[in-house]
Length: 383
Ligand SMILES: NC(=O)c1ccc[n+]([C@@H]2O[C@H](COP(=O)([O-])OP(=O)(O)OC[C@H]3O[C@@H](n4cnc5c(N)ncnc54)[C@H](O)[C@@H]3O)[C@@H](O)[C@H]2O)c1
Image 1 (cartoon, rainbow, N blue to C red):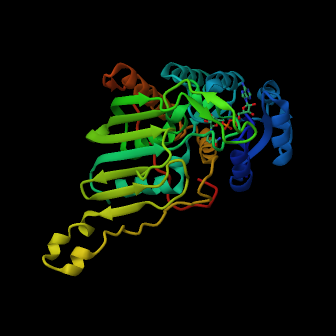
Image 2 (image 1 turned 45 degrees about the vertical axis):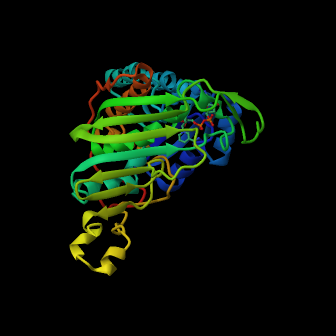
Image 3 (image 1 turned 180 degrees about the vertical axis):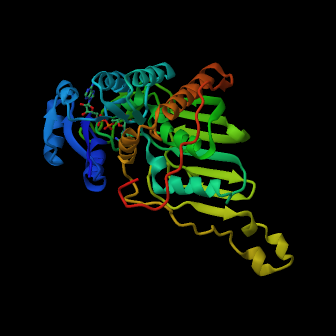
């Protein structure tokens, strides 16, 4: 089997998930090098996951064997590192957010075109079993025509678990740039492109206390909004209400629901690759058709059981997008996680910020099609 050689730049928290999942599940990929601005971090991950090389960034980019470089650095370094990877003649898979602005995103898109290289971007969770199943249910008409949706990421912030939470409260962080890509990508891949945006933004707390080790008890200054409430108008006139927050201690709002002419689809957490969608068909709620039947009127509304139709290797996984990118490179086609989708999501995040700043409706400029669904069946760990 042909194995695509991979280098990873940025050996922090999320590199553990990539390294574990790629080495365990995706036999077509082979991580041959870890690189980091901090040599100890690269050495530690290389040792832990038995990766042959621990490199500096320069050494990794000079290694002729490496075909794809995964960029797992903090957001503000994404564009600079992506540029260097492409300049070195290698394909890129970048963690989210792809870029801080649409201009930066387009710069990388243009450079990749010029160099005839491919770029994929996280999130790749829409390639996982739960969101692929949701896409199939919508396409097959189980909820009729989608009319509305709600998307809510209601959390208390990352300083409860992340060892270096600072970048989440500076430009390029916040709930919108941290978790927004999962929700926006899920909406676009399920419902189509975003056309118009309105929003409001707030900063609920000027300072935050770090609860995680090793800096437990220290305070962080918040430089950006940490709560957004937005209304998105999507293709086909679908109206979406969206909340992205680091300011909420508890919420019972659903993560995502899509309401159609014939039913409701409860979409599992878009941050996860697995999870069972719930489907409520209109037939189950129109109990007046049973007339005076007390039994029918008292019957609870139950979801239709739908199977997950694709492989679920684990609920929380990363790396499927890298596998799909490797296949796209071999077949000389754009990856499903490519720059058109990444540019659209980057513009939407900035559009939500801009609409909040100006108080006006933001009209999207970029276009984007729904990525091709994955084929059903096949071997686990392969596409
Ligand atoms: N932590 C998570 O659970 C998670 C989940 C999904 C996606 N992400 C995304 O992954 C990226 C990294 O997040 P993280 O939590 O792993 O961050 P982290 O701070 O834990 O790790 C970042 C690593 O990048 C290195 N680094 C920083 N600047 C660099 C540079 N210029 N060149 C080379 N290396 C550099 C740091 O030394 C560090 O080892 C972010 O974009 C984040 O949004 C994180």
